[in-house]
Length: 623
Image (tube, rainbow, N blue to C red; front, side, top):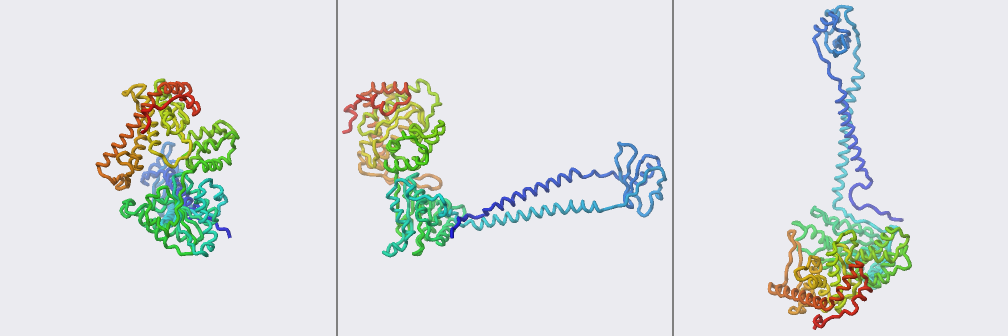
C-alpha cells in the first residue's frame, strides 16, 4: 500500500482557521452597518404639547387634523406646511369631544392601535444583534481553540517526510564526488539489505556526517541516498529544533526520533547541524542554554537506538571544527564523509549535467570552462549554467552560445560589468597603469599564475580587474609561490607610485593591500612560513560571549610583536620586488597601458604578446 506524505507541523492545514476568521470579520461589518443604519433612520421624536392647548387651537381653527391612536395618544397636524407634527395625550375612557373639542372644527381620525409591526421591529432590533454577537463569540472560541491546538503541538517535530516523490534523484544524477558516493552507497545497502551485513557481524552505522565547503552538494547527496534506498526520508534543519521556549528543542528531537522508529527503515537528515551541535560550554544559548539541552537529547537518542531499527542519521555541516566531541564519537556519527571542491574532471562532469537539459551550441567548450573554473563549487557551476541561459534569452537566441558561457563565467567569478559608470580620462589612465602593473609583475615572476584577462571596465565593486588563473588545480603552495602572489597583489599600487610619485598614490589599491595583509598574516600565523617563527603556528580561538566576538590568543605579547614584524617584512619585501620589476619593464607597462586605453579589455593571448621581451631583474629574484 502506497504511503502518502503527511504534515508534521502543528495547526490546521485545510484553511478552516482562515475561513473562521474571515466569517467573523464579515459578521462584525454587518453588525456595524446595522447599527449605523438604525442610527441614521431613527425617526425624530415629536414635540409633546398639553391637551388643553390642542383643544383651544382646534376650536380656533389652527389645527387641520387630529389622529387618535388607541385610547390616549394623539398626533396633531397644524394648519400650514411649515408647522411640524406634534403629539399629545388625552384622558383615557372618554371621547375627545367630551373633553372640550367642538364638532366640525377639525378633521378627526380614529386609528385603532396595532402593535404587530412594532413587535417584529422590536424583536428584529433586539434579537438580531444578540445572534450576531453570539456567532462572533463562537467563532472567536473556535479560533482560540485552534491556537491552543497549535500551542499543544509546539513540541512536535517539523521535519518533512519524503520518499514517495516522483522526481527522485539517484547517484547517477550527481556528478563527481565518486569517493563520497561510494561511502554513501554502503549506507544504501545497509538499508536495503541489512541481513547481508548482520550475517558477518557488521553493525549498521548510526550516523553519517557530510562535511564540506558550502555549495559542494551535501544536501544533494543526502537526497540521492534517500532516492537510492527508496526509504522514508525525514529532513529538518538544525535551526528548526530551537525556539524561545525552554525544552521545545529536546521535545522536537524526541518526537522526530519516535516517528523515525515507527517508519523504519528510514533516514533522518539534519541540515546545518552546527546550529544545535556546537561544543557545549561555549556560553551560547542564553541562561537556560536551550541549544545544549537539544544537543543532549540528540546524543541520547542516537546512542539509544536498538539494533534492528534500521534508522540512520545523515547530517551536513561546513563547520565540523565547532561540533561537540560527543557528537563525533563512534556510536553516534560512525562515519565522516568529506565532500571537497570538485577537481577539473568533476567540474566538467557537473557542467555537462547542468547543460544537458539546455539547448547548447556545438561551439560551447565545457572542457575549457572546467579548466578555468578552478576552485568553483557545484553551486557556482550551476549558477554559471543558469546565467548563460539568461544571457542567451536576453539576446533573443534559441541556443546558448560559447560567448554566453564565457560572459556568465566572468560575471560569476569577478562580477558583472558596469559599463554605465562614467570615468574621466585621468581616472581611466590611472586605472590602466594600475591594472598593467598587476599584469607585468604577475607575468614576469616565475611562480605566479597566468594572466587570463586585463580590463579597465568596472566589474562588481572594482574599478578594473587583472585576472590570474592557475594552469592546473593545486593542493599545496610553497613560500615562493605565496611571495610571488604578494608581489603581484602590490603591483598596482607600485605602478601608481613609479609613474605618478610616492605622494600621488590613490585609494584604488585598498582591496589589494587588505588581501596582501591577510595572506601575509596567514603565512606567518597559520602556515609557519615566517623567518623567525618558521614551523610555528599560532591558533586563535574565536567565540561569542555576551554578543561580542572574543579572540583568545595562545601566545604572548612579545610573540604578537614578532608576528607583526614578520608580516611587515613580507609586505615590504613584496613591494620592493614589485617595484624592481616595474622599473625594469617600464616600457612594457606603457605598451599595455595604451592597449587598455584603446580597447578597455585585453585577453590572455594579447597580454602575452604585448609583454613579450619583459624580464625579471636579478634584484627581484629570491635567494
